[in-house]
Image 1 (cartoon, rainbow, N blue to C red):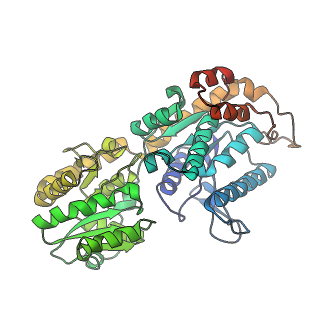
Image 2: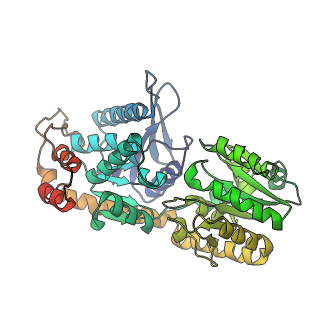
Image 3: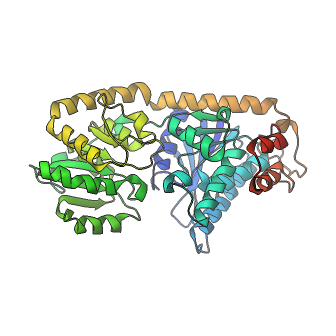
Length: 448
C-alpha cells in the first residue's frame, strides 16, 4: 500500500510527541512492506529530499514572506505541503490514501482528499479543548473547529488511548464506529543505547550522593510541573539529598524558574533546557525516578520512553498515562492534581529500590508485549485496509469531479475542489444554533 503522511514535525524537527510517532510508525510500516512518503516542514531555504531506511521524506522550506502570526504560519505551511504533494502527483507519484497527523496539516489533508478523491485518515494526538481545560478565547475556538473539521473529513480517526477516544466522542460528537484506538510505541534500543560515560554526564547535573528525580518533556502548563514544585517541599523534608532535573523547553519555563526561586527550591532544581539523546539516555539510566505529573496527557509516550530506558516511573492517573501505567505492577500512579499523593509515590520509590527494580523490569516486559512498533504498524495497516476497501466499493470513488485535470495514467490526479461540496454546507449547519447532531447526520447521509 502507498501512503502519503502529512506531519508538521518530523525528526530532527521535534517539538512534541508527533515527530517521533510519525517517524517510528513510518519505519514500522516500511518494514511491513508498505511504501511510505512523508511530506513535512524543513528548516532550510530550499526543499530537501531523502531516503530514510526506505521512507521517502520531503521537507518543504519555510514560507516567505514571514507570517505575522501563528495561524498565518500554519496556513502557509499547509500551502507548501499542498504544493509539494501536487508536484509529486504531476511527477507520477500516486497514493492509496492520505494520513494527516493533527490539525496543523488539516487543510492540506482535506484539500488533497477532495482534489484527488482519495480517502483521508487522521490521527488526533491531542485536542485544544483538552490542552486548555476548555475553550477560553477565539484562537482556541478556531483551532478546535479545525480539529473537528479534520475528524469530519477523515474516513477513520485514529487515537492512541481509550481516554482520547472518549474525549473525541464527547467534544466532537464523533460516532464510535469512526474511531480506532491504536496505542503509541517506542523502540527500546533507542533509549538503551548509551555513548560515553553515563556517570560523568550525571555529574554535570547532580552530585554522586544525590538522588535524581527526572522529568523530560515540553515546559507547558498541562504537563503539571507546578504540581511537582508543590510536591518537592514534602520530598525534600524527608530526603535531603535529592536533585530535580527538568529537561526540555517551552513557554512555561520562565514561570517555573521564578516559582522555584519564590519557593526557595531553586538550588534543588536543575533546568537543563534542550538535551541531546546521549544526555537524555544517560540521565534516564542513572535517575532514581522518572516523574510525569501531567494534568492532561492523551497517551503519555514519555512514560514508555522511561520504561524503555529502565527507569521506574511515577505518573498522575490521568488520560493515557493511567492506561500505560498499572499501579504497583509496572510503575506508580498518584491521584490527579494532588501534590501530596505525588510526593508519597516518589518517596516510596526512593525508599524501596528493590521494589522499584521489580517495577521497571515488569515495565520493560510490558513494552515488548503491548507497545511493539511491529504490532502497532499491523493494527494501523488494518485501519488502512478497512478504509481502502470501503473506498473502492463506494459511490464516491466512482463519481468523477466536475473539474478534471490532464493526468495521463496517474490515478492520484483526479480533479479539484467544487464550490458546493457537502462539507461546506455541513459547516454552515454546524454553526447554526440548537442544531442537533442527529439532524446533521441525517442531512449529510453517508458522506465520507
